[in-house]
Image 1 (cartoon, rainbow, N blue to C red):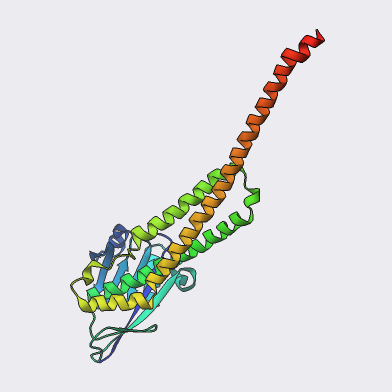
Image 2: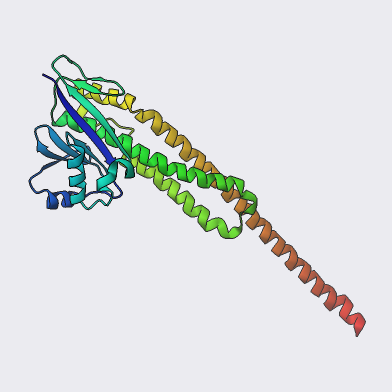
Length: 267
């Protein structure tokens, strides 16, 4: 007998807390896996809520998802498919699949439980979390391009804006490393070869590592852009100070000439 289950992962405009879920859905069974909250509705129905604003629904219809998000007061709930970053992945459960098999369209396996649901949800959540960061970095890349195009127009007063831009890049990198956990495998797969195979295949299909490397490259590029622009501003600041010093010396020379040469001659 074959069973179909759909996973839908959604990037929310804000992080949903454990308190909110407990308040609105008191009957859910809550537990923590990989620094994320797992809410069990039934044996084959789960909600996986991360600390970085991504929530994944396992075996929910789109109408059920909308109703759940509405109860959590998400404004985009009724049109999350177009208004929010999301990704879905269907799973087929059948006795014919002895080992987890994953392609770009389907996850195939012969069993299903909370651990399996959590691993799939984690990988999908990481994928959506990466997409959120990718879009954020696209905007910063546009800002960086403007920096390169307008370096001749940069002024000393732009230094604070550059520092703020540099801080936002540093925070972006910190959030990726600290929240998405892309450099470490989940703890729950270390003693389970099948779960490890499931996560590794999902990681490859979703291109988690390669996408993370692209993000790292873009952040390095942005860092270099800011450093270049900051150097230009510092150079202009130095030139400005040098001209101030030159004018002060000239003024002092003028007054010395006036006091010791011109003034005595006039008297």
